[in-house]
Image (cartoon, rainbow, N blue to C red; front, side, top):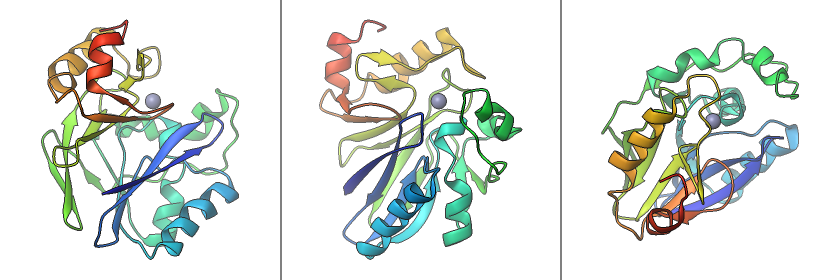
Length: 211
Ligand SMILES: [Zn+2]
């Protein structure tokens, strides 16, 4: 499994393109917003002969879904996300403006819903989805036991945890999700977060002041 990280949009959101030896690929959190960012993602897919199979969302805060419409228009693939976050897509132009970012299109609608413990396959690979609410009601983490990687969205960061003051956030729910679903994973699990650098479960167990 190969993981390519892009950092997109004024919120500095991490968009991940994940693919394996079959060249089938998934995008996790398409945050590309500017024309240059969209072409950067599309160019990487083309230059590496990748076949995009799925567009997955860890959650649906605006900065994690800016590129979903572009990917639907370009590849005909609708995003997949947990139903609990679908309402976050309403009035996304106004929400985005309140953070000082101007966009000119409302959000791309969801295709399929992702549920807790669902297997998400592409190529010879798969992720298990963990429902980890708290940062948002429908936050999902994508885990590959075989590869030892976890895509945590905005639930867990290096030395920090997700904000709970945004729409749909709840602190106690977030701590419960992290301690019940993420910390039991092997210490060596590499965590790819929605913002900032990677970390590991072991590092966060030892050093995260919120846990
Ligand atoms: Zn978020």
